[in-house]
Image (cartoon, rainbow, N blue to C red; front, side, top):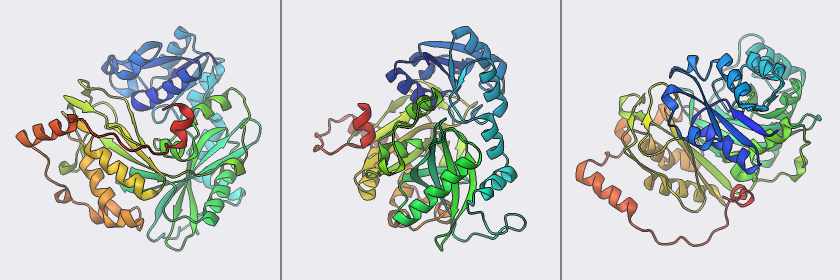
Length: 424
């Protein structure tokens, strides 16, 4: 693999390209007319226009993406997440062109992309299903959303990289994710990991994937679905395992064997991710647009920011409103939580309404602090009135001045394994 085309945009395109560059692989960006000046376009070694702003005419335009592959001479394609990442026809088309597909087989995408066939495949490998899945499903009380990251190579090895807790959701959209879960004991973690591996085996999976489970108040868990791609929230797994999941995807696509066994994988500390959206919280989280007049990322011990925007850039109406993923790692959950709160205070975003204060509300809520929450957390606890007033005028100017004030050096701390291993 010498040249990788990333069939995506924004933060995930940048995140994939950075790893590719570290591995000595040239990168190719694709972009719409609206993204001509986007950071991922400037970062890539080459960039190709694939169409107008609407995604169905650009990032979802298979013919245009394939044409960019041919024009650039790319010998591999990484789809990222969203857009064409779970399009089995696209995966087959790329492979027919003699290009390496950095993703699972089209057959696995098809099996897991259909709820009925996914459950049938999982059932054949004794993966727990919600009782009554073949008819009237049992109602799961106080459900939590816990997912397991899996890695599968082309040589029959399937491993799990432990769990991510994704129960804090707004209208079924994940908002805060963490690894590990605050409620899993080692025995349950092993059971869920084994079930996830079986789900991967059931569809002949290859690459990085995520098996999602519903976890009920009694401690029982049930297969929900399998996402046949890299997840938005993959950084928290990287932070607690020390693995670069994109690098693992690339090595697997090149036909390399996974170099470790299940017993070699260990959890190190705790990581929490907050998705930062350009949304108006007071207006039912309506997407907001505008120019990022001020955009400054927080830094500090255990802090990681995955984004795809820069100061002065216009936030467009055409794409998902997520600006960034703000991640904090710590040796324990409370340290990670406090670091994330401090990072929110040091994150300067002016020009679009955003969800940073909403994130602070979640992280400070007693139910989140205690770990006693479920997928109904936001609906149950949040109203816009619960947020602290937004600074205005002179108050906001003073807040920015405070942001730019030099901070005392933080005491040395042990960094996350991921940052240690990858020089970040």
